[in-house]
Image (cartoon, rainbow, N blue to C red):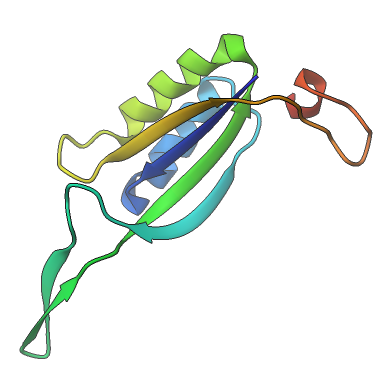
Length: 114
Protein backbone atom coordinates (compact mmCIF):
# COMPACT_ATOMS: atom_id res chain seq x y z
CA UNK A 1 0.00 0.00 0.00
CA UNK A 2 1.05 3.60 -0.58
CA UNK A 3 0.24 6.90 1.10
CA UNK A 4 0.11 9.75 -1.40
CA UNK A 5 0.44 13.23 0.09
CA UNK A 6 -0.06 16.18 -2.26
CA UNK A 7 0.11 19.92 -1.69
CA UNK A 8 -1.84 21.82 -4.37
CA UNK A 9 -3.43 25.18 -5.14
CA UNK A 10 -6.90 25.51 -3.58
CA UNK A 11 -8.35 26.56 -6.94
CA UNK A 12 -7.53 23.13 -8.41
CA UNK A 13 -9.20 21.05 -5.67
CA UNK A 14 -12.45 20.19 -7.48
CA UNK A 15 -10.64 19.05 -10.64
CA UNK A 16 -8.21 16.95 -8.59
CA UNK A 17 -11.04 15.32 -6.59
CA UNK A 18 -12.79 14.32 -9.81
CA UNK A 19 -9.57 13.00 -11.36
CA UNK A 20 -8.45 10.85 -8.42
CA UNK A 21 -11.95 9.44 -8.00
CA UNK A 22 -11.99 8.44 -11.69
CA UNK A 23 -8.53 6.89 -11.22
CA UNK A 24 -9.93 4.59 -8.53
CA UNK A 25 -9.18 6.25 -5.18
CA UNK A 26 -12.03 5.39 -2.82
CA UNK A 27 -11.40 8.14 -0.29
CA UNK A 28 -9.08 10.90 0.78
CA UNK A 29 -8.50 13.54 3.42
CA UNK A 30 -8.29 17.26 2.62
CA UNK A 31 -6.68 19.82 4.92
CA UNK A 32 -6.30 23.57 4.40
CA UNK A 33 -2.65 24.50 5.01
CA UNK A 34 -0.27 27.40 4.36
CA UNK A 35 3.27 27.27 3.08
CA UNK A 36 5.83 28.32 0.52
CA UNK A 37 8.44 26.79 -1.73
CA UNK A 38 10.17 28.42 -4.67
CA UNK A 39 7.32 30.91 -4.82
CA UNK A 40 8.47 32.49 -1.53
CA UNK A 41 5.19 34.34 -0.97
CA UNK A 42 3.89 37.39 -2.80
CA UNK A 43 3.28 41.09 -2.31
CA UNK A 44 -0.28 42.41 -2.08
CA UNK A 45 -1.85 45.83 -1.62
CA UNK A 46 -4.61 46.44 0.92
CA UNK A 47 -6.14 49.93 1.27
CA UNK A 48 -3.12 51.47 -0.38
CA UNK A 49 -0.61 49.76 1.89
CA UNK A 50 1.71 47.18 0.41
CA UNK A 51 2.46 44.08 2.47
CA UNK A 52 4.15 40.75 1.94
CA UNK A 53 2.32 37.43 2.30
CA UNK A 54 5.00 34.87 3.12
CA UNK A 55 2.82 31.78 3.63
CA UNK A 56 0.35 31.13 0.83
CA UNK A 57 -2.87 29.13 1.22
CA UNK A 58 -2.59 25.57 -0.09
CA UNK A 59 -4.58 22.34 0.17
CA UNK A 60 -3.04 19.10 1.47
CA UNK A 61 -4.48 15.80 0.21
CA UNK A 62 -3.77 12.44 1.82
CA UNK A 63 -4.77 9.38 -0.20
CA UNK A 64 -4.17 5.75 0.83
CA UNK A 65 -4.21 3.36 -2.14
CA UNK A 66 -3.10 -0.19 -2.99
CA UNK A 67 0.42 -0.21 -4.48
CA UNK A 68 -0.79 -1.29 -7.93
CA UNK A 69 -3.09 1.76 -8.13
CA UNK A 70 -0.58 4.39 -6.94
CA UNK A 71 0.90 5.37 -10.32
CA UNK A 72 -2.55 5.82 -11.88
CA UNK A 73 -3.74 8.04 -9.01
CA UNK A 74 -0.51 10.10 -9.03
CA UNK A 75 -0.77 10.67 -12.77
CA UNK A 76 -4.43 11.75 -12.51
CA UNK A 77 -3.67 14.02 -9.56
CA UNK A 78 -0.68 15.73 -11.15
CA UNK A 79 -2.50 16.19 -14.45
CA UNK A 80 -5.50 17.83 -12.80
CA UNK A 81 -3.39 20.04 -10.50
CA UNK A 82 -1.05 21.29 -13.24
CA UNK A 83 -1.53 24.90 -14.40
CA UNK A 84 2.02 25.27 -15.72
CA UNK A 85 2.75 28.09 -13.28
CA UNK A 86 4.96 28.26 -10.21
CA UNK A 87 3.19 27.09 -7.06
CA UNK A 88 1.32 24.13 -8.59
CA UNK A 89 2.52 21.98 -5.71
CA UNK A 90 4.24 18.72 -4.89
CA UNK A 91 3.35 15.03 -4.56
CA UNK A 92 5.03 12.75 -2.01
CA UNK A 93 4.63 8.97 -2.00
CA UNK A 94 5.40 6.80 1.02
CA UNK A 95 5.04 3.15 1.87
CA UNK A 96 2.01 2.50 4.07
CA UNK A 97 2.82 -0.32 6.45
CA UNK A 98 -0.63 -0.99 7.86
CA UNK A 99 -4.23 0.25 7.75
CA UNK A 100 -7.19 -0.58 10.01
CA UNK A 101 -10.86 0.24 9.55
CA UNK A 102 -11.96 0.87 13.14
CA UNK A 103 -15.65 -0.03 12.70
CA UNK A 104 -15.16 -3.47 11.15
CA UNK A 105 -11.60 -4.40 12.09
CA UNK A 106 -10.66 -4.87 8.42
CA UNK A 107 -6.96 -4.50 7.78
CA UNK A 108 -4.68 -3.30 5.00
CA UNK A 109 -6.15 -3.33 1.47
CA UNK A 110 -9.63 -4.26 2.73
CA UNK A 111 -9.53 -1.28 5.10
CA UNK A 112 -8.89 1.26 2.34
CA UNK A 113 -11.19 -0.27 -0.27
CA UNK A 114 -14.46 1.53 -1.04
